[in-house]
Amino acid sequence: MQLRIHKWPEKILKKRCRRVEKVDARIQEMFREMYSLMQVHRGIGLAANQGGLDLCLVVIATEESTFQLANPRVVKKEGRITFTEGCLSFPGLEVDTVRARKVWVQALNEEGEEVEIEAEDVLAVVFQHEIDHVNGIPFFRRAKWRDRIRLYPQLKKIVKETRNELRKSAT
Image (cartoon, rainbow, N blue to C red; front, side, top):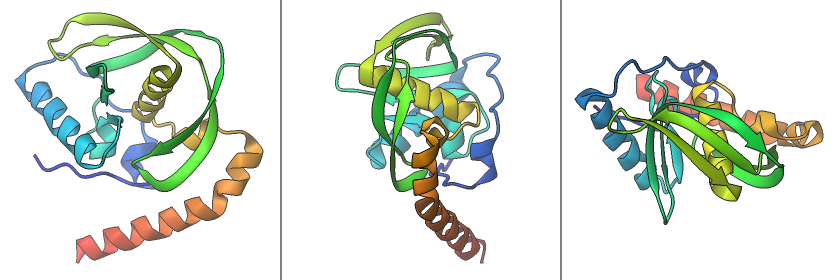
């Protein structure tokens, strides 16, 4: 399987991903491929649809922990934090977003076991960012309206570059 980073406005980034019925060897291989892709691009999180997979999978790696999760969902939120986010699917774009400061996430881990993870601060932001991705929600939608308007020229540039890249690869 050869994954690549899909960039805005590719359709796969705009749709809710399919749930995973069972974590098996095929899904574990997808986790490995996603992790490698994330590492090559120096990310700390990656959703499956960013790699072109229509599955509800995310990988997250910090200095302390690595998470490979199927069907993650936030079940509880607490507090608020403003954080400057970027994204591999939106090269060069950064914007302040407002997220929950603490979250509890339920998912299946890489062994197919049900887990609940408690995350705070930056890790909580990363979980929310990646879970939004598999639900078809781009991170800039979590920004204030005035910031979203300010981003328009950058988004327009990303759209143009992505379309040019796709045209070149199709020929």
